[in-house]
Every structure is written in structure tokens, then in C-alpha cells.
Amino acid sequence: EQLEVALKAYVNKQQEKWRTQIGEEEYRNFQRLLLLNSIDREWRDYLTAADDLRREIGLEAVGQRDPKVQYKIRSAQMFNDMRNNIEQNIVDRFFFQVEQHRTFIQQQEAEIAYQTQAREAGYQVVKREKGRGVELRRDAPKVGRNDPCPCGSGKKYKQCHMRQDMAAAQASGANGRPAKSSARSSKKRRRRR
Image (cartoon, rainbow, N blue to C red; front, side, top):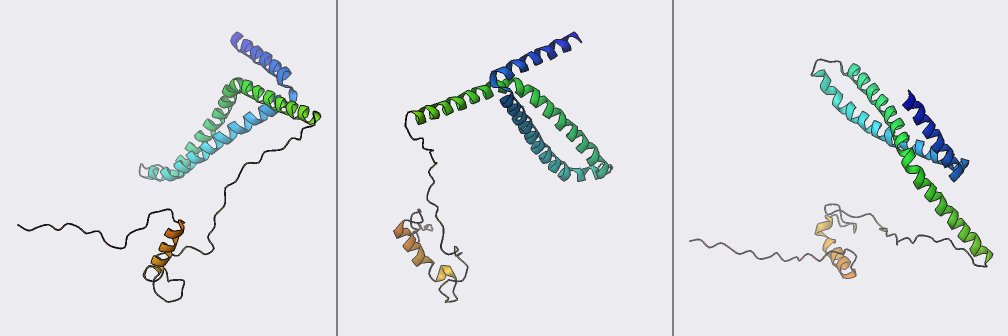
């Protein structure tokens, strides 16, 4: 009981210290972020485990147990475990991540101060945009080897225009693969003795 009182006093003292260091608003934002991250992570794990349980529960019928009752029991256990894990994660991460959050806030404040100082000195602050690559799209859908040729001849594409299209693609470098030789490689014949 004395240990519990001492721990509560220590936690309250640390919380008060962090509130004064990073500010009340940032402290609440940190708590909210920590809570949402923990709930989100555990909820996803719970849903994955529930899907696995749903797949496996049919085997309970082999063991002469009602699958519906077993599913209810196990899913309730998993839900309680999830709630306990959320609480444990929040407590574990709170003490370790408050320092990281404070460092992040200090970096943001330094960046804002730098931008303000640059504006006051007459510089223009330009936001950097991430460069995007060129988006390539096909004008027409890709034709499969055994699909009818788009020229309308009624033949399969592989027997009509595929070789011409592949040669054109090879010449333009669009495919990126080396050309396949149409001539078959000669195999050595075995001699009969």
C-alpha cells in the first residue's frame, strides 16, 4: 500500500513536471496521440486474431464442443486481453515517449522561429514540394497473347501482330527486356552407340 502511494506520487510529480516543460496544450495532445496509437494498434491486432479464431473455431465441433459457445468465450477473453494490453501500452510508452515528444516540439518551435527570423530579415520562405515521377499510362488496354488481335483479322494476337509490336517495343526500349530470338537454339543430338 505504501508502494502504491509512493508510485502515484512519483507519477503525479512527473506529469506536473512535463506539463510545465512542454505546456498544457501539448501535454494533452501527446496524451491523445498516445491513447489513439495504442488503441489503434491493439484493435488491429484484435481484429486479425478474431479472423483467425473465426477460421479455426470449426475444429471445436470435432472435439464435441459447441463452436458458437467456444467462439463467444474465446472472443470475450481476447477482448479483455486487448483492453489490458491497451492500458499496459499506454503506461509503458508514456514515460519513454514524453521525452521524444518534447524533442519534437522543440524542433518545431525552432523551425517556426527560423522562418519568422527569415521573414523579418526580408527573405521569402518557400515550401519545398516533393518531386513526383512521370506517370506512365497505356493508351489502350494490354492485349493478351491468346486474345483476338485488335486489328480485326479474327486471329489470335500471338499469330497476327504480336511479333511486330514486340519488335517495335524493343526498338523503342519501352519493354526494357532483351529481345527473344525467334530462332530456336540448336540442341546437341545424342549419338546412338
